[in-house]
Image (cartoon, rainbow, N blue to C red; front, side):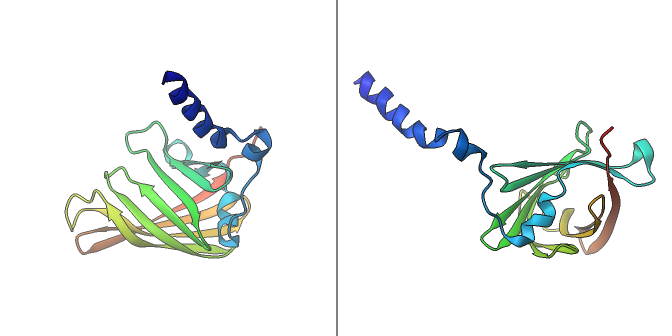
Length: 168
């Protein structure tokens, strides 16, 4: 009986490890996801020196998930995962406020706008949360991210002008 269990476990694991070639192939993603994939690397807020935001972008899952880490290692670190959903782009933001807004993105190589679809773990209907994001892709090394935050009936936009950190 133990042999059968081990054999079944081994057979079920095989598709997960189909071979190096399959694991290294990047999966085709919609055109609207391409500008996000180009963000891979480290970015720093312009003109703020050590006090400015630091953002790191990394592609995972065969190029189908872009993970954004904002201010890693700080008490207010946050993560956002951008991913294709058919021909659309979605994102889930893991906020330092403890909730997770999910947003639908539309746009092109110049800009992308994300709007709230739903949210998990919201403490109360008026609790603070992110409800929108607009990326403006100035060029390959410059980006503006304008996050819209809502608490109660009050909305504020937090704008980050970012520059790609050059490799030395």
